[in-house]
Image (tube, rainbow, N blue to C red; front, side):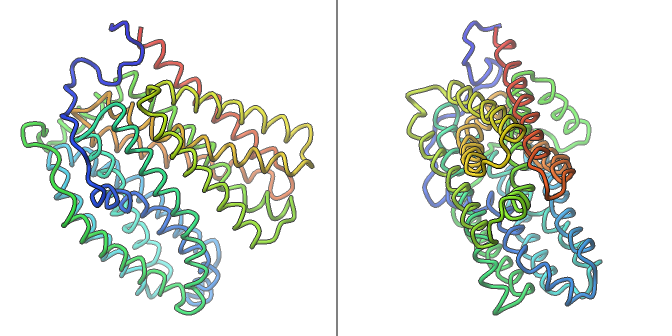
Length: 410
């Protein structure tokens, strides 16, 4: 094994020529990656109206969120490996066309059953953009440049959770929940134009794999068999579980337990999301001075520290609300240090299968989120301990996964 513990790309995978990614192309890729929070958070303020308009129950409407997330995970796992054989541009174009049609289907849905189905399709087709956007960057960059670009994308996409609920809340009143889906359909059309105009094919024909079930299964097995890729991916995915624990529990913790108003909750949520962008910007300035692996180690260490501190505060001083709010901000901010670096390092390990590697990474991310979400609700709206405990467990497992990459480097 190589003696250098910070090698990003193993000797068997030749790094691509370092080609710059123009700003319009990077913005197009960021918009593709932002479709998940946009399609989720813009829709949330209209949920009560969906219950009334479609004569259904709140639990049935919640299924439209669940099926969207399942579709998002399935879309990445399906199309990521296919893009290693078909190239990047064709799946992006076809997927964005289908995303547009799915958004239109949501806007026109006559019943809750139809809405549940088309929301799954919207997630499925939205997952195509998410997974292929990461693969495109991995095709053209590596090392410091890749980490910097993934961090820039994180800054851009972190704005989506801030803007989306505010925009959705402003739109639901005048145009209704169906109007929100028409707006999302319009955004999908903008994405289609951006892909067609600014995103060229980035995977040469001689680097593609045959589109066969045996080959796709082999590619998945190959990336899962790469210990360092798996370590970086698990560190990122399980670390995201801590973030999702906060996202799922924060409405109840901040409003029901701490007593803040819904408006103040939106402000605090926006501040915490802004922390991701700030940390991501700091990361872009540090990449080049510090290796992405070193920055990831700092981020994972900070994440573990926050996890321990949050559990201690939840058990010992749960009424010190300002301290919990500070820790929530620190928790979200660490994501700006870990996400871009972990993604660059993970995909650097499996460069010849970047689409498959991106798919496994994204699928793990949202699968962990789906597992974590019900766990933080065990305590209802009376205790912060379930959230803190879930965050703590996720941070410990994330740090343990990162530690395996250190051992496998020697």
